[in-house]
Every structure is written in C-alpha cells, then in structure tokens.
Image 1 (cartoon, rainbow, N blue to C red):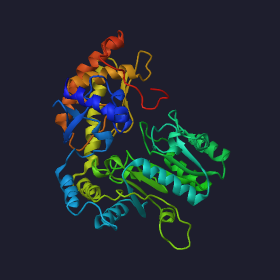
Image 2: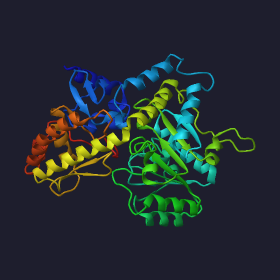
Image 3: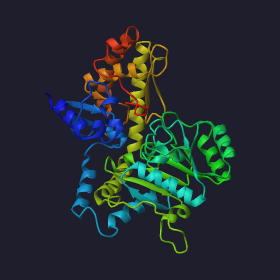
Length: 433
C-alpha cells in the first residue's frame, strides 16, 4: 500500500468526505489525483509519496503569491512569538483593520473571521438588522456563498435546513438586470440584501454591477459584493475597483493573506456599527470568534498587502493568465477542438470549459483531460494563477496540455469511458452521494 492509499483510507475513516472542504475531496478530482498532500512551496506541491506537481488549485484559490512565501511566513511567525492571541484586542489586529480601511475607500470598518462563510452570513445578518426586512436575494449563477442555512437551504444540498429558512432566499440571474427588477417588484419592501460576486466565470456586461447598484439604492436593499475570489486577484483593491462599483458591504477571504486563515467583512460605518457599542442602538451580535483575530494570520495579511504593492502582484497574475489562455486556445485550434475546449471569463482567473460531442460542458471529458495533465505532473482542477507561476511553469504546463489535448481528441472521437482510469469527476452540489 502506498502512503497515498494509506492516508486516503484514514482520511475517509476519520473525516466525513475525507477532507474539510468539499472541493478538496476525492470525487471532484480524477481517479489518478494524489489523495493526500504533504507540503507545498511556491507553486509546487508534493503528495505523501513524494510526487511533485505544479499546482493550479493553489489551496482553493487562497494562495495568490506562492506557498510559504518567506516574507509572509516570517511575518506570521513573528506574531506567533508575540503570543498569537491575546485577552484584549492586539496591536496587529488594529494595524490590520487600519490597512484594510486605508486600502478600500468603501470600507469604513472591518470585522475579521477565519472563513468566508462566517463573513457572508454576518453581512446578511447586518442587512436584515439595518433594513428590518427578511429576504435575501442571491445570484443563482454563482456557486457558493456560505455553508450556513440562508444559502445552503437554497441549494440542492438542503438536507437539515427547515423549509421556513429555505423560503427566505430568492434568486436572480447574473447579467440579467430585468430578473433583478422583477424580484424587487415582486417582493417590494421585503428584501434586505442582494448578494453576488462581481465576477465568477462570466464577466459583467452592460454595466450590470452599476445598474444593480442603482436598483439597490432605489429599493432600499443593502448591496453586498462577495470578493472572496475576486479580491486580491482582479486588483489589489478588488473587482470593485476593477469594474468601478461601490457596494454597501463587501466580503473578502482566499488570497488576502496568501493562504493564512483570514476572512473579512467590511463596509459603510452606518451598517457595520450596528455590531458595535454605539449608545442608544439595538445590539447586533455580529461576529464573535475566539480565533477570528489570530495574530499570525493578521501579520500575514498586513505583509501580503505590502508584497502586492511592491511586486505588482496582480499585473503578473493577469499576464500569466493571458499566457496560459492564449497557449491553451492555440493548442485547441491545432487539434481543431476549439468548439469543445475553450476558456471563458477574466484572464486573471480563466475558466476552463471542456465539452462532449454535443458541445456541452462535460465532467466525463473534463476527467479525461485533467487525468492526462496529472500524469505529466500538473494538478489543475481549475486555473488559479499565483505570482510564483512564471513563464517556466506556464510553458511546462502547455507542453503537458498538448499531449492531454490529443488524448482528449481521441476520446471525443471514440468512447470516453475507455480513456478514464478511475472515477469520473462529480459536482459538489448534488442531492445524493
């Protein structure tokens, strides 16, 4: 038994689904993917058997510079030696809050937590308290906002969520301003907040973000933009800056501390302060977590911001994203597969679409391509570019893709099942195992 097999079996025995994030579980990867990783450095990762891969998952997109980037790791370690936590607010806690408020003009106050679900749920709670309304409108085209009831109850995986809670979340379509207007009219005076990502796999068109801003102002709805993925990737000031829109509340996570566990809720003082101590106001129990302001992670956050400024990280991410998009597109054309294999979305976060013979996205054919990439030492569940992805790594990836594309083409002309060496990739959101 290899260590991958040994640790993989232990993982499923001891941890529900074998991992602490569903997007890290075995079922969302091809069967030949490593089961358990041991260490990572830069943009390389090694499994427990010592196999090396160029990583494009980058820890669920949370590492935007590189694993164990010395300056950031050292900043975190310094805070560990300061005690890593405290009985009162810590110095680095105040400095990190100041750094965030200085960075984002639309953030007057900030609250830190350890994961994105905590801060998006806190945003909806604030919106309900601020408006006195109960419904939350969320974008149906964006795959994940929180593991909490208000969102999960509105998905196919709604087991354990009372129907009364499920019914409090409404849906609208991205880039469809009419769907927002219809929802706001149907539930006029009852919607507390609208939440969406500024961009997911498709970019906003026809000033959609700005038009939603106008509607939220007109109807008295709190406008929440979830920058969990777009923040610290589209621009140091996030996709809000890139697309030119100002939300009422904004949430961050993922790359804001280069893989250290920090998430943040920020926004207008008049809303955020509902969770504060201003006399004469009804108290909102906003976020209260023992480890939410862990000093090591906040030290990493402050240093990450400095690294971004000094090294122009987002420009590099865009440049390398363009390089891989252009390379993969050209390879698909070489094999006359451009109608079955293409890239969509922003080039700083390109979305890889792999189709079946009917030209519709296919997990079966996606499995074939990603399986072949793994054989070449490329771990690419999706494409999350980091600062330490250089031309060297991109070129090696494109070399691997040329062979994987050939195998994909052969599968497209034959029976895909004959090319798959393990399980077919499954989606996270489905009703039954």
